[in-house]
Image (cartoon, rainbow, N blue to C red; front, side):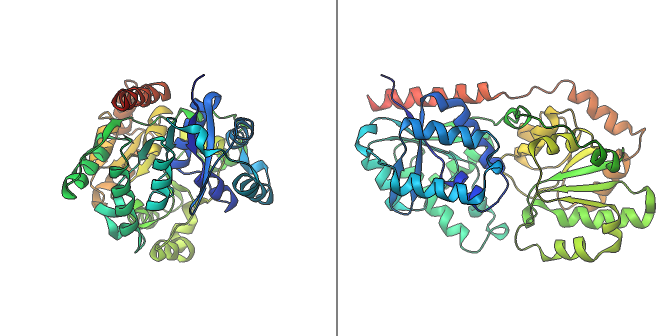
Length: 398
């Protein structure tokens, strides 16, 4: 009998309970649930308590997570979490030798949690999305660097496997291991796909909303936080409005407001020029994101640092031009298609935006030609990398 794959879904449940939208990390976790669901069971972890849900309960939970969980009430999900964690029997001794996937860094800062996983004799595989709190702590909450250092140290000592989303993240993890005089475990680079977003059941497009946006608008798709560099783009839009008035293209911001971005909030709420041409969407369904993005003049992605960049591949997959920061990971995954601009070069950002807003933009036309050669990375290719790592780990355990 084939052993089940165990997938930690704690973060997914907690974010739903808090009413938060799915992030790129959450979409990756959902893709793993979708791929392994026929032979998977859910793990939930709360402090030192670790619960493995039985097959039937796991199937029910996976079905709910994969099929528009926001249709259920917050109280329903709280009840689901409490029932699963504290009222459902868990036979932890039955899973020796099973693969355990932690896709979202949840709980990795806790030595007690890692030790519990190791005592259960599971084969852990950790997905590392980035080392940004360590390499760029100025863009994170004050305590996050120390927490992420603990996470990475625990992952390195756990004697499991590691998946990373890019060669760039692998390089950063290898450098961290070397700095701490630790060996890098078996590691596999597995690029991410956006097909899970575009293959979700689509509702009818909001034609009135799309019509009101017009033919000339740009999109930013991310939580509003310092490293995403909304401030540069908003200053550019204020200048554009001074220059073009009613002819200024709309700027569509899709994403929740984050933290430590008071200057951005001031511009969003108090600048008359920006308010004239801004559309802010704090919560959007997958179908709304696709509808808005595919009609844009371009996706703007001016981040200072990223571990991957799902919005970039989502836009390229939909045939939408991209203006992106000239950072290493975007060059890795962008296949030389986007326009790459230094994140602090406001003059160049404005120049490209002014060009792309024109119906006869030659630069945009050239990028559309490059887009015809874009080779999308499928989830099947991603999971071929995952399965290869699983085989290596099984061989190493013999």
